[in-house]
Amino acid sequence: MLSRAITLVESRLASDQDLAQEVIDAVLPHSGNSLRIGITGVPGVGKSTFIEAFGLYLIREQRQKLAVLAIDPTSQRSGGSILGDKTRMDALSTNPDAYIRPSPAGKSLGGVARSTRESIILCEAAGFDTIFVETVGVGQSETAVHAMVDFFLLLMLAGAGDELQGIKRGIMEMSDAIAITKADGTNVQKAKTARAEYRNALHLYPRAASGWLPQVSTCSALQPSGLDTIWKTVTEYLSLTKGNGYFEQKRRDQNLQWLHEAIRQGLEENFYRHGQVKTQLPAITSEVKEGHKSAFAAAAELLRLV
Amino acid sequence: MLSRAITLVESRLASDQDLAQEVIDAVLPHSGNSLRIGITGVPGVGKSTFIEAFGLYLIREQRQKLAVLAIDPTSQRSGGSILGDKTRMDALSTNPDAYIRPSPAGKSLGGVARSTRESIILCEAAGFDTIFVETVGVGQSETAVHAMVDFFLLLMLAGAGDELQGIKRGIMEMSDAIAITKADGTNVQKAKTARAEYRNALHLYPRAASGWLPQVSTCSALQPSGLDTIWKTVTEYLSLTKGNGYFEQKRRDQNLQWLHEAIRQGLEENFYRHGQVKTQLPAITSEVKEGHKSAFAAAAELLRLV
Image (cartoon, rainbow over the protein chains, first blue to last red):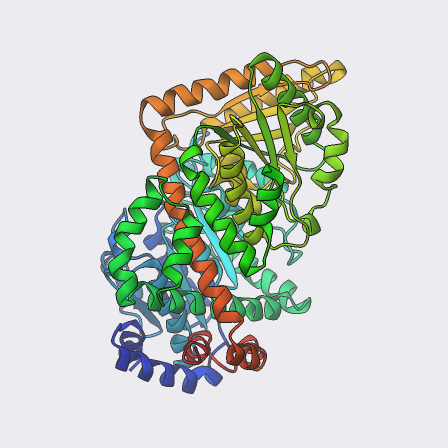
């Protein structure tokens, strides 16, 4: 039933979308009682292995029911889709307390972001207490994920001085915790060094509005180890932000942000599929591109068509 | 005449805006032949002193005609407006080859960004070869500036380990050069140390699409010194990017970006001032905020009104 409802919110058919809105509004009162965790990291960081290990820990040790959603449009993914991941998440994907849902194929980031956000509501209404929203961490999707989760976890690899390589600067700044993965075997010392470096780096950032100081820890999905520390960090964050009202405030702000985002998307969709706009856009675009017409004059001209 | 034309593009009156578009389109063929440099830095970095010294250097030594525009909405500025700066830029503001224009007061960032971009065109048509677009470097405006300039210069202060404090992470990433200011007197050694640190930090970033490796140098507006090095960096950048086609490509991309941005702004303006939307928005907003209605259902409802 949950899968069918998610398929409905992912559909682009107008009739499906109307029905989807009815479903969402009907289940809305039963949603919201979960912890939404965004998880990101570059390809190679061991994201699917981590999600399998941390997910099983949450289910077995913390009695959570876990849903895993992915936000990256499949076409843009550089390192394998979650569908591939799902088959790698053997134990998690067959566990009755886990639900794994791959990203819909061939959709724009805006479309995926929207259906992921609605899928969170559906998963919550279906009784899942913890929702992972995973993303690749090299593109534009982290901002979208950050705007739909309570807690943002960044996975990093211990390296030799090149730890910052490949991850966008803004992503570290939006993280509530960093977990250095693969801290096992001969890697343990390197991971500890990286932990110290990240702790130093994070101290340079201005204090977040939540009052929270991002935490850095090491973990191994192989052993497994360090997963309890990460969970402890998450619960400490919850206790702080639910205590000072930040948690609820952030969710309200996120709701508003999505309202304005949805309005913007709707306005642009209607505009760009308008008959006359479609006809005239190519010529005007090329005039603007070559500097023969100002962007604002061209925009005014196109806006007069609708 | 230039000042009157800029006042016209800053006006919110519909009749002024129509006339402004005519002016812009008429002068457009005479624009584009300048170098557009974005300059940012936190309050206290000595931005106005730097602009005065570097501006005079360009006018006197490089025979440039210089226009200085500011993008930060006055109301949001934490450290004095450019109007105040203008009175501090004594020699520059009275130099016949310089034109300084403060930010329009009381406008939104979107409004300022738009009028600044059109002001660039007007300044170019008026014969200015170099345009500085200055911004405070602590807010949202850097992305807007970055999208309208050819070269982005970040001013930084040498400090003791806290160099990153106060500046947003993404800003370093979008910079083509960093200049460490106030490298004079007892500060010289500290500035050199900071230069080495920034050079190391910049090496960690992925190579930019332009093929350019951001440069770091020190300067003093007081002595003055180091200004020729910064200019040399700018000309090297120009030579590289004009040679490999990146310069022209970036300008075309910026034109397109502004077209879509202007369309978005126009659509949202029309939407939010629509009578029924205005009436119903407050109640719907509060339902969405409190989680009683989904953002997407609410957006669909509002979009049906127009």
